[in-house]
Image 1 (spheres, rainbow, N blue to C red):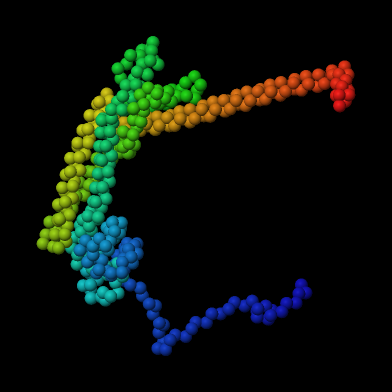
Image 2: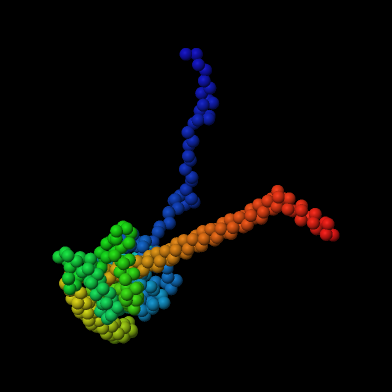
Length: 404
């Protein structure tokens, strides 16, 4: 092949670059790389703990001091809960102890290891933190449980003591027996509480009006004094949101946590920490006893109410009973609103028809007056034309002229 290539040019432009090693620093040895802190703790735990500690400006010793003093201005409950899985294990303490005993430089330890050395000065750190968490958590948990107990108590007593609601139930029974007349469902002396939700589903012949609309209209017209019965059941919706099972579980968990703290109190005998905690634990114990008593009392009242309705107290829950009553009240109030709108629309249409009839009568009257006026005008014109044809008009005029 007769091909001419400038190989020297190729080598000059495309040759691989040779990277020369830099000469070692004076003395002939390379400068050693800087080493990081010594890590004895699990790297992930150490990283999370470093992040946790970065939130506090008081330093590691200040954090431990804050726990020892139950300083609620330094920590919130979530921060303390996040600390529990980051606390040192026995293995962590052993590793740090071995490092120190080996005579190695403690200042080279990582942030997590340094914190663990501070925690080591705080005996029973985990029990202290858990006790601190309970102290912060108890007031909120107590308030939540108390609120549920109060809502349940008020719902039970409102339903039990409402004279208006009892009268409404009587009216519903009479209404139901009439509708079911001639069937095996007639002449009943009572009905299941679930029947209240079926009233809304029973429709009239127009397929729009429901039995609930009729009931609302009936109460408004015949027994207006009880038509506003839902106002006496204002806590029923709140009672429907209370789960007796969940409430019992919350109280049990509260008691379990309190028992654990009470058991750990002996670890802090003679300490300021124990003295500060003991006062709180005493008050919390009294509060818990009252909560237990109130729960037992409300549970008894609720079962009595269920039995009053003829239901099985072992099966009916507050969510079911008060849920049904709340739904009934909601549909009833909606039906009352529908009835008001229907009456307003009927009145509006009636007024519209009355106005239309009035305008029609006015139009007829106007036409009648116009017709009568037209007849008069035609009569005058006819008389005038008749006078002209007979010449009377001109005769009379001549007579007037001669007379002048």
